[in-house]
Amino acid sequence: MRPGEYFATHPVFTHAEFVRAHTARGRSERTSNNLLAQHLRAGHLLRVRRGLYASVPPGAAPEQTTVDPYLVMTKLTDDAVVAYHAALQFHGKSYSVWQRFHYLTCARMKPLTFQGMRFVPVQAPRAVRSLPDLGGGVLEMHHGGGLVRVTTLERTFVDALSAPSKCGGWEELWRSLEMVEFFDLDAVTNYALALGSALTVARVGFYLEQHREALMVEDRYLDLLRQHAPTQARYLDAKREPGRLVPAWNLVVPESVLARSWTEVL
Image 1 (cartoon, rainbow, N blue to C red):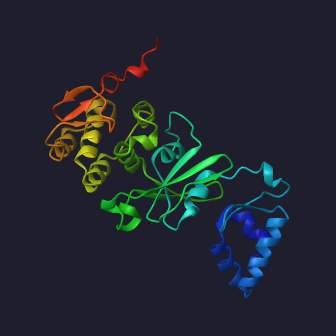
Image 2: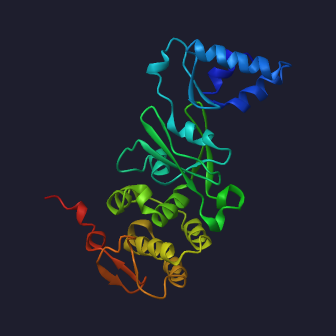
Image 3: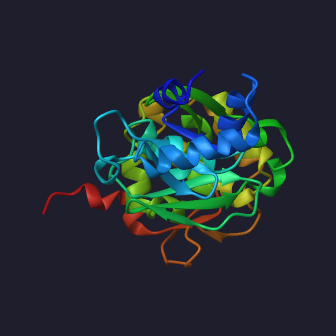
């Protein structure tokens, strides 16, 4: 495959991927490196960071080319997975549009800013870090001419409730999750339990109980989650925001979340 053909079918790619494809035709790695440098100087490529490139469409100017953030995230590490608010946004279920994108990985990475977008690595939860697909619930989907690895809505739901700060807090999170019309509740409960966090289980259970009619939540799911809820009262919010105790989940829940008061029109 010639470089132009490769760029046309690979909107975002790594140095290693290009060299592997190019040397398969009998070219040397040095020739591959020289070609990348030439096309970069000619404005056919953008360097996202060292070792990561984005293709510039024919006839377009590099400075006017917007690179797809989800393709970038997927290529930032070998195991990168679009997650948290970024996953909700990818699935079209985020209340607000952000330019801050979190991705799961086991690698030690620094945040990256590119084209005004901030890419933030998050270490996968310890309980699932060594498992295939970082514990499962990962999709590989065609998007923007490439492939994106992204958490399912079920895993996103649980991950978001385990780390609400990565989704903008309770109002943004509740408004976003309420855009989802259906969850596979077996997948939700299995993953929530796999994380081994009583607080996360309680948050998931509380949300499902609050939305049990809309999501058609059967008692068996709530009963299973209650068995793994905290044995002592915990705050819903890490900031220990005062509220009312919900005994079924041993959660102290802020009144604004209990009443979903942000939905009121003043």
